[in-house]
Image (tube, each protein chain N blue to C red):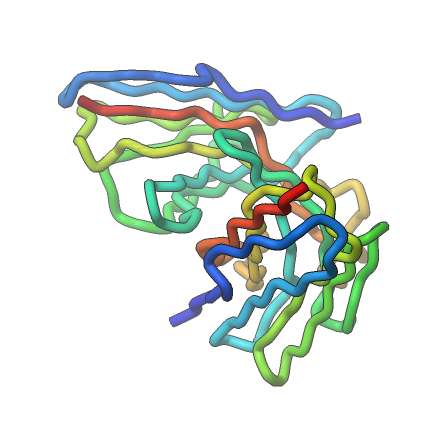
Length: 114
Length: 121
């Protein structure tokens, strides 16, 4: 069974701190992996997508890494800001014939304290 | 640019009543479309996806159905709602803008709508 786990479930850090969010998956035959941000009561915003052949992707203060062999991905946030407070979701994509099926983790709730 | 719309934003329905949630995408053609549900305390679960008009694939057995009457319209329905149907429903699309080569390389990104919060009482 394809499962995605995110640790920790919740994290509170002071502003300016660097932090790492973890994602692990059981089936390493992935198509890609996406990190999303979800603000309370809102939809998902795509942050980064890593193709299965890639090891990392960077966007601004965000860096996501992928290690398929160990079934792990990390999202690194540098110099955190209060505006980064949100739930971060990891979604592992598996090839589903004509489309990419995403399996989501339950998320990490991040609070950045000013 | 592409945008995705969902309505209504919030819905309160009695048990046993019918349901129709609508999702439309603008600015792209022939998108793949998806319905997800996010139940309280649980992760997002894929319910249905569609790769073309009239083509619907169901991921989990349930009280819901989906239809795609037009290229950029995706509808989630139920004839009789259950309490367990309560949740946050998200529609998503993935594009073919990168072409087949990009899709084969794993570049397919899913973009999500604002969601519909459904409460069944």
